[in-house]
Length: 218
Image (cartoon, rainbow, N blue to C red; front, side, top):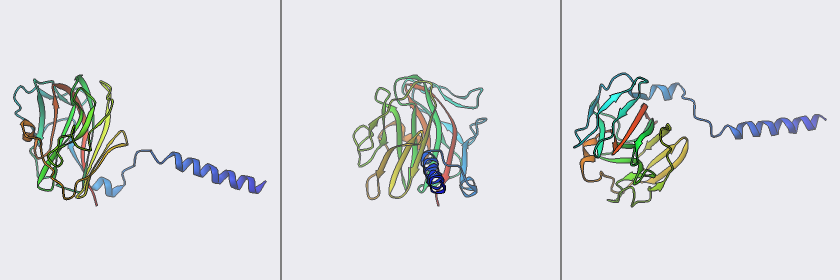
């Protein structure tokens, strides 16, 4: 009988800890100390509306979410505050498409002395990927993939940038893992280049974003 209860306890422990492995990570003190809130839900200090041709209006709604209104093509904002890390960091945010059928989150980010853009929901609403790597856009390089996004549904997005790779998670599911060390990383030529050094934009689409943070990595 004692042996039975011993094995039962071991099995319970395995099931409990195994089932917890996909739970979101709880920030410890070190994580909190390394985290910067980029958008606090009350003001756009440190941000500027990007002067895209035909851009939509930028505002903050009653719930403290950033609202990018649909434009003819691109609408967005870019960082105008203190310099940010260029490698070894994570950016996290929540975003959702509220209207339209193209990308609702174009996250331009720094990498060393260059920049790239994470695209979520492009090319008809489902393309994800990073532009550009080795001069190939998100639809043409190995980061390109399809992901079904529901309208008016919030998605947790996390991008990790290190010297050697870019990694992206959507709702804690790893969707991109690309080695970039020694490769050409750059922006797609065009108005999107106005999003540097850090920018958020949409294409012919309205979107909301919130809880935008950056965490430096050890």
